Structure formats: structure tokens, C-alpha cells
Image 1: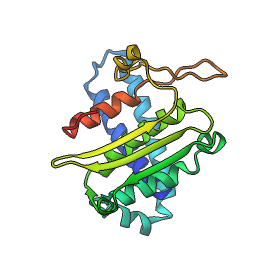
Image 2 (image 1 turned 180 degrees about the vertical axis):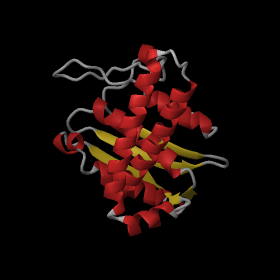
Image 3 (image 1 turned 90 degrees about the vertical axis):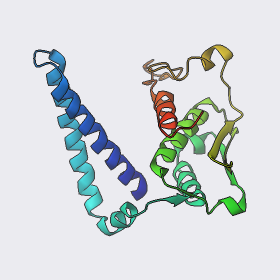
Image 4 (image 1 turned 120 degrees about the horizontal axis):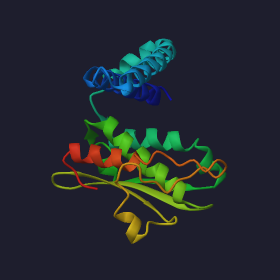
Length: 202
């Protein structure tokens, strides 16, 4: 829980900075300028709330901030622990299976926050696509020059038509059953951008 609080705090800081930069670069006559500043202010308030919570755990947070890398086993253990409490996983008896060869568990990842973002988005999508009793396999293998993560489920799948659209900003197949409101459709766009920035492929 502390790890994810710390990660979210860093994400909020990044969003707030980018939003303020957008505010400064927006034309002074633009109506969007004041809206952008309001968003930055709201993010600042959220950041302060997070800081109040995190300050109570400062010794633990100091240890987290000193981590330059995490091992595959640590990344998978944190992810598995987080999703074991997910209501959709528990309510639908979805089986999450984390796999890696024993000798690869000690392999370390420097950009581990990026890996968490990628895995979380992909696992969330799998959970959404899975019915009661489905399985999601999350695995790691190592190539000669790259790390390979796989998230595989036996859920509803993706049509060939949809497959060509899934990385487009705003494209989504997820809708709230009660309100009809759609999700943002930026999860896989974000994943694709992160993977590209790491010189990887998805």
C-alpha cells in the first residue's frame, strides 16, 4: 500500500508540473488558460493530501525512495499482493498466476515504476475481459538484450478490427453499466508511449 501511495504521489507531482507548464504556454486570451490553472491547483491540493498521509510513514518512504531497482520477484510479489485484494478479482474468482524461472527472480529492473504502470494497465484490461473463473497469466522471461513480460488471459479476447484501434487515444470498449459513461480510453495509449520510450515493443 505504501509503495502504491508513493508511486501515486510521484505521478501527481508529474501531472501537476506538466499541467502548470501547459498553463504557462497557453495563450493569455485563451479560455483554456484559466481552466488549466484550476486543474493544476486541484492537483496541488491532492498532492498536499498525499503528503500528509505519507509523512506519517516517513521512515518507510525514505527506504522506498532509496531503491534504485527492484527484482522481478519483488515486482511480481507487490503486484500480486495488490491484486489479491481487488474486488473484481475476488468477486469473480479470477485466478492470477505469476510465473518466472527461479533463476530469473533475482534479475533487477531499473525503470520499475514504468513496469508497474504497464503491468497494472494490462492486468486491469484482462480483469475487465474475464468472466467468472477465468485465469490471467503474468510471466517474465529474459532475452539476450531485453526483458519480456506477458499478460495472457482466457477472457473475451480482442477482435481483429478492434486490435488496430486499441492504442488510439480515447478509444474504449469499457462503459459503466449503470450510467453508460465511457472510460477515458487512454490506458493502452499510455502503455504504448511508455514502451516506446523504453525502446521496447508491445
